[in-house]
Image (cartoon, rainbow, N blue to C red):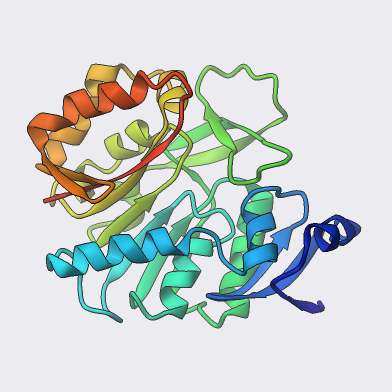
Length: 272
């Protein structure tokens, strides 16, 4: 497959849609993207990366407090890995030694595996094709046709979107007692159920970067009090936009997020 340099224009992107996928030489590795993806794929095509500055900022914060291993060591989990943009970027830049990448959507998973291989990371990134939940089994996944990073677990079993049935696994079953140094999660509001499936893993209070999304949390069917209780049971503090807060602030903070009329997501770092 032909390899394209990033830095194309919007006109180039429109022209590129003649192909279903493109291989982009990005800032943090080589990524095969879907041209149907108007979010992350589009961003990689134009800029060669997608929000890596945010990732780097979080890592610098964690290392400044000795909360994760030094550069080149340790294992991280990329939950909701999409096509691998977080896990691959971190290993290409030697931020961690190993990664576990979990992605439920079949086409994304195929691209994830391709990208792991073409970046020479087969022996360092372990991949799993499943949705994370509180139990093993199967569940319905709603498919977003224009934002391939916005596929959503559907616990109700009913949806107006296209759907597919995917496996579910728990984080504890995947980790199987191994030492993990960081979990980076973006699972479109299903994070509460994923945390319930990682009780043993999260009992250590390891650093956890999570996307909290009001609409997604509400539609996942998890009670707000249970959601907050899960967070408070594992982490004594959280970090958001340059400030560290004690656990006592977590309840009003989450209520404030969930009351956001625009329903915007917020990236939060929970840590010891």
